[in-house]
Image 1: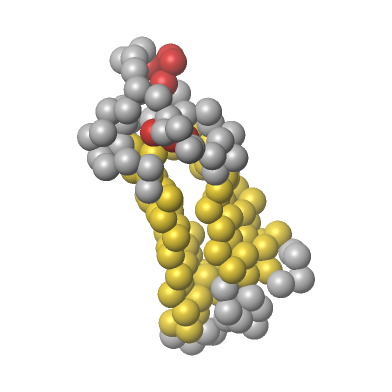
Image 2: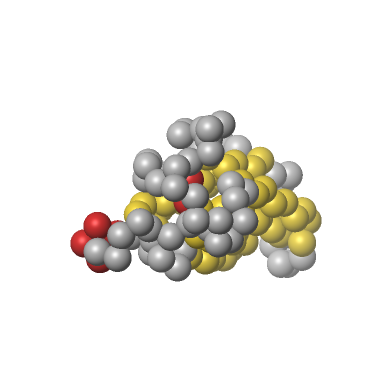
Length: 134
């Protein structure tokens, strides 16, 4: 059994156009839920069509959760656009990188994965049984 730290980050300069929700379920070896955690970074309601980031927007925006001890994690990340790109040019609106990192209490990196998120639709990322000893 181990505790875990989960973090979400991106260097995409227009990350402000997205609301992000991180959900983690800590489970026992028998797949029973031990803990349920979530964190949301809400910038604006869907359809806001902002032209610039909010004045107080932190350009080093990250989400992170620390868990109780468990056998493994199930992780969901929702990336929801509230403001669409300013151009319809596909070349200028390529998917952007979003990094999901999971570290256990021994500082062992279990996941350090870059996901490519569609600028138009956002994404739903699901990681199952992270850290499970199979």
